[in-house]
Image 1: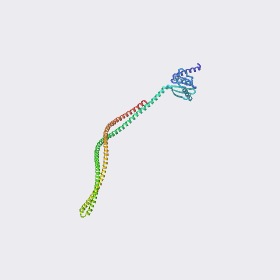
Image 2: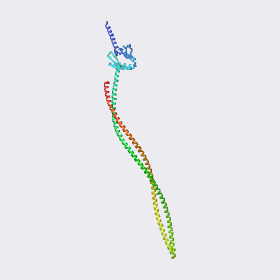
Image 3: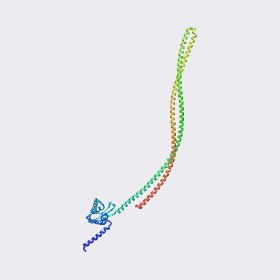
Length: 417
């Protein structure tokens, strides 16, 4: 056989074996020439990109291949152009590149670009969808595990902290309840003292009201006696006025008596003169005239004495009238003040009655408060007991929470890594 024929036959056998190998490879393989044309493409390329199984790919350009793939998977022209630019950049750099390309349906292809100096490049396409999804699931699992770890630990620690805080609050509430019990006890004593004081005040107010009633009666009697004295004083004033009038009448009479005495004296003088003229015959008549004159002088003197006495009487009566007027004015003042005091005492008596009623109601209220305080004391004691039970319960919660934290840590160490 001719050597060239032998070489051709060997090349045919080599190519047939290479195609068989390419058909059975799980990765898609494309061999590009230095001019970016497809030299070889296995069947996996068709299945990966949804190309027709009988569609020949050898000999077409890289841009033509990407256009076919874009049509098959639904890429727009801009995306095809961008992918083609990436391949040209890889070729220009001349270094290997690996990139994961995610399709819209969720499929992920891992593309490896292997440059062959002066001979083009080899592109391999590996479906790593399951691997990527597994990695994503593992990452999500790790994230959830971290969240679970964080949530469990945070929750248990929060529960423990809350239980501790509630236990502390129970301790504080217990102390407050004890202090409240002491305060309630003191309040009960104070309420009892208040009730007793109110009863004493009620009795005192009652006695005061009775005393005021007696004072009012005494003031009424005093007012009556003052009115009587005032009436008698006014009657005395009338009597004194009449006495003054009678004295004035007596003075008029005395004036008449003095006038008569003067006339008698003049008559006796004339009689004495006539008796002297008569001589011995008129001597007896002269004696009579002398006696008449003496009697007239005595009458005049007596009238003057009576007039002086009447003047003294009038002066005394005037003084008595002035004193009586002063007494009357004072009696009027006393009567007015007595009436005002009686009115004031009556008002105070009414108020005292109202005070008694208020004190009685206050005493009743104090008794109600004392009863309520006793009930409150029982409730506070019950609350103290309940808070003690709650504190014990929170201590148990703290212990159980501590056990839960330890169990959670062991579980996460064993199952979550």
